[in-house]
Length: 467
Ligand code: 6PG
Image 1 (cartoon, rainbow, N blue to C red):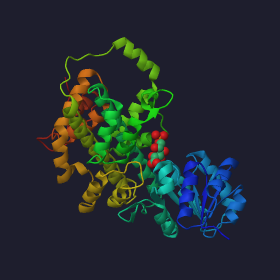
Image 2: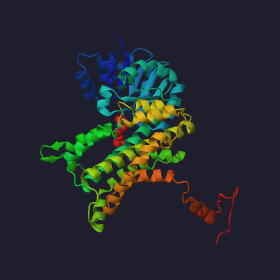
Image 3: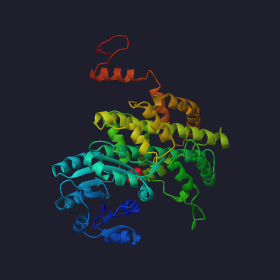
Image 4: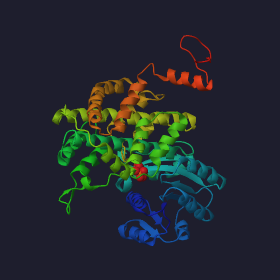
């Protein structure tokens, strides 16, 4: 008996994805260099049409052709090593799906390389963590279109569903799937940091308890802030630690790790000249958080700031923070979508922006009620670049701006860092400024470097002998 779908890499993600494939009636086969992981699959998959084998040779020989092999292994050199190991065993037309968070440059390279070997490659973003992999992730495949047609029935069945629509669509050529997943993660970084800042305001300005914040987040999650990340934050806030007789969150070290996808989003955005300051700020805050000892020293050196009165308390504060968070969420998605819209042209991905918003509505980490509206915007205006230009978001941003100012006033007064939220407001205010002070920058460039400037009152290129 031959198997329909193969997985290399049986860590939690790989194992869960494969069990999900088997749930859906496909014969699923897995392998891993780690024997325990293979055994774990066989134990968990008992009674199901799933099997773990120990050698790649056996693995490849048991798959029906064209073989459909997904890799869920750590991004980087391991992906290349696994591909090299597979190549001598494969036949022309077989399909390799890299489901990890690979850098899009690597995916481009592998795509071109595997073309020369007549192996079809799909660089594929998979989002939703361990639970998503098991119950239905959001899947972003890019690369060989004919390979997509072959794996489509499997991926559509496995993916999360929203209103019956599967959260998977063919993203585009070459590395587009991994690019889109990378930007998903950039947005993920932004939303996470924004929620963290909202939590900090409620706690340090409002003096709210974790349980009260949990209840508030629960309430928010039932409204326009409805999202996976707000939902899990409500759970996190109320989680207790038995040994501690207190809340677990309070004893978690405030140094955030990162594997690179957020940073890559900022890097490519800089390369393409697309501003994504809220994503940049989230990456930067992870960086600042890592300097724990220096922060301790500086907090001693500069001491705390004690403002006189809390201007806003209780429900008033909660409402302002909700509005500030909603405003910042919109801006964070707007930046990510703007980056995708520009990358679509610059990198020739020809992205279906509406389709991307659609498949992010379920399964993935940034799924949120807002994505339905975002989808609507891109469906009404397929050429849309930045959603802040739409009437719908204009009204919402207008409606919330005052609260952002209010919240930032409170944090600035108290020395509470809210870099991400501030960046959202600043981004918005910069774009709504017809005139920015960059005339000064142009003048300075021309002053010291004869870099020339243009004028608003005359046409042409000018240079002045300044001073
Ligand atoms: C997802 C996530 C996932 C990512 C983690 C960790 O969509 O399921 O984006 O792919 O690996 O979020 O990322 P960091 O370690 O960089 O925080």
